[in-house]
Amino acid sequence: MYFDESKNVMGADIDILVITSKDEMISYSLKLHFSCTHNMAEYEAPLQGLCYLLSFQVKR
Image (cartoon, rainbow, N blue to C red; front, side, top):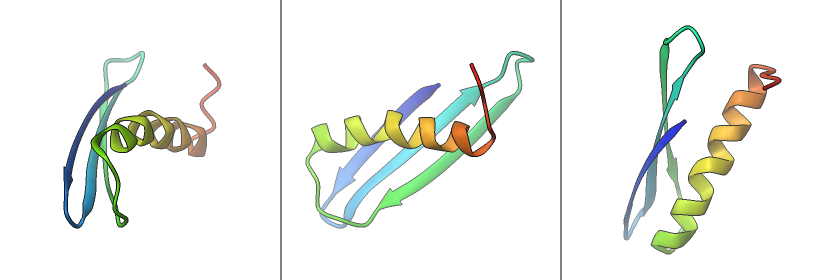
């Protein structure tokens, strides 16, 4: 998983790129609609990425 996040007054944008074992690329973007620091956005990105993968029942 690769992450990119940007923060502004309206919240934060998080972009996640997942590369599968078959070299398929899956991108996922979301917006946090609450005020947060840059560090909070950095911590939220991997958490959201893991939740996204769990929704596909990824085991490892």
